[in-house]
Length: 357
Image (cartoon, rainbow, N blue to C red; front, side):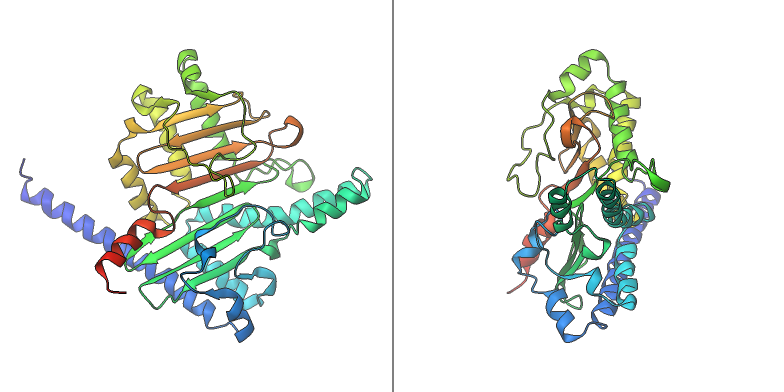
């Protein structure tokens, strides 16, 4: 069917506007990175600036740096002016909600130290346990920025990473990949002090429980993948596992209201990105088909007990796991992945096929 000229003109104008907005977004991030690089002394450059081919670019981890060292320069080794520029890179890359989640995760590391300090002073934990916890090196200062390649060139990327956070951006000409995007919180709900009740990833949890609770008993049974809740997301950094098979219930089996909740969850992850980039990624998911998205659940449908859910679509994967020690659910790991294009895999392949290297 031939589109009326007015609709075709509108479609093309919106497409070009979206492309212009994406290019402007990429340029803002690039300029923020360049400003940061220009402040680094030679010793800092050795830490922060790495080859685009460095293997650290395509590896992520959510463990504390005391267990897994990170590439790049940490916040603790930056000057105050450099920290301000670090935050400019992060805030221009993410939406306000994404930026607040990321910085709250940084701050939770400081609160973890305060929490266990108070337990130690009350003799609630032993000297040995306290020493073990200190060696994990929880700290706002121990989050790292690594820049791979040269932002003035066509191909480059950056990573912001530490305990419970991994932000991975890859730029290839005017294209951009923003996954894997990992976020986590410990505790999921802070238990005491003026922070009592603070839930950095509360929406991700509440919406998952809401979707599962809205299903009929028959659909709940079909959506349940297993009874044994994994200790971590199934596709964790060191698990070596991939979710290839689709499990649970299809979007086509959901009511209109249930599909809406599933889309709320997806937006809660995707719209951690700056608005224009989030729209591009969200459009891909919608065009691939909401009816083709699978929702799976593991564990009780209770916030206080360990539980896990997955949304697995043709173009993306979202995992959420709330597990903890001694049967408690107060430790969240969550991830959003773009299938076939993590770390810019797909756009890099097309780039290298079209360019001489």
